[in-house]
Length: 278
Image (cartoon, rainbow, N blue to C red):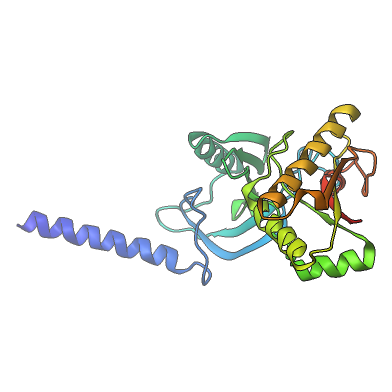
């Protein structure tokens, strides 16, 4: 019985000490479920937002080779607090290998491996997940940024569409498709519904649905792809109850860019579908 009591007391003290270790975290902050924290670190700042994460492939933040995924970004800043059990912070190499090994165990790959800086990538069904880990202040600071790639929700309503069509004669959308295919991704279906609502609210409106691509791939293939994507949008709108004879389709491929194809941001802007008032 004495042994049982001692064991219970030990477990309670262990749980209490664990709670105290995390009690110093900044209010409202916690670890990302993708990684366990390293011993001795506390969270002193955290932030969540829709943002861009720059992955420094060659250590130059302005390099065109850098990756710039966009999506839901979680930023966690840790600070090392020495204790009797952990008297000094881990080395940069130890931190990098810790996160790299954890990523590999979960199916991730290492994109960048430099002293004090590593970038990791996980392929998920809903989109890629990126993680960047860096250290500072002699190992006493650890910075973790995790981005779940996704397009920002477009705040577009049927009324706003109609206003823009009347003003400009066209409206541009970033409708998401499967890579090199004309299959509309589920997250873009609410946008399709707004187009349907617009056509229902304006029964005399006729439009041309026109697809555009960036300059990656051949011109001929891009033209076919852009037309097929325009047809997919028209088919989805028709499925929503709009007569097909109110819509024409066209595919311009890479012929009408609206941004610089030399940057990822420019290519993303060029991959679009436009609704043109007839």
